Image 1 (cartoon, rainbow, N blue to C red):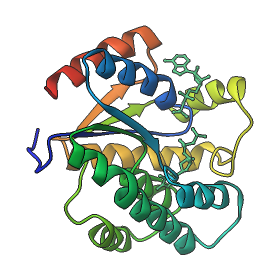
Image 2: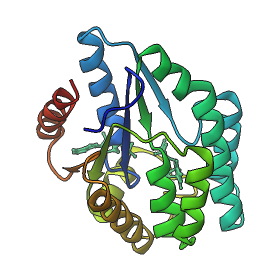
Image 3: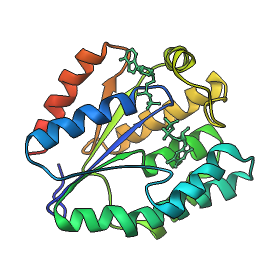
Length: 207
Ligand SMILES: Nc1ncnc2c1ncn2[C@@H]1O[C@H](COP(=O)(O)OP(=O)(O)O)[C@@H](O)[C@H]1O
Ligand SMILES: Cc1cn([C@H]2C[C@H](O)[C@@H](COP(=O)(O)OP(=O)(O)O)O2)c(=O)[nH]c1=O
């Protein structure tokens, strides 16, 4: 994987809602801490006091699509400045439940925002920062939906229909092909145990 000018590592977890990201973040954190790594676990939208306020609005209030994209990137700007960059400078490992790929997938693929506008926002907000590793938890919307229904009440995004999640999934998979060096696609229709084994191998590759 590409070398960066920091000694920490930046790992992002992506996938449609209900794909299993949260389930495996704890596992990866435990794995790294057992190996004496300093780990910062965070999430988007959110991760800072301001970002969590923006998250509340983003997950529950109806808004214009461009407003939604801009607020995602505003929360991200704060998150990078306050949490991600300082942690990487210290040499910590940063695990983020979602990052910019989610904006491409949800606001771009899912809702149809012009990807060119998204690239401009990315170039503005983090021209030089990219994850070292992105774990894409890939599963059909039907399986994800069934898991979610058993688990929790839905937010604004989770109430979307399977057509929306198919577009989100397709955009994630398109990006995985575009950036094969950092993306690893995980078949999340398998058991939690089988997925853990796959993840163990992938984290090991990071050194
Ligand atoms: N591989 C799996 N097999 C069966 N159930 C799973 C699997 N992975 C996650 N789950 C369950 O599915 C639900 C959604 O998982 P979660 O990790 O919260 O997804 P996400 O964070 O991607 O939205 C949870 O109840 C979790 O226990
Ligand atoms: C980071 C990000 C998240 N989202 C959406 C995806 C999710 O539906 C929602 C919150 O993500 P997530 O934290 O995965 O939700 P939960 O805690 O319920 O598992 O925000 C976007 O639409 N664009 C983005 O850029």
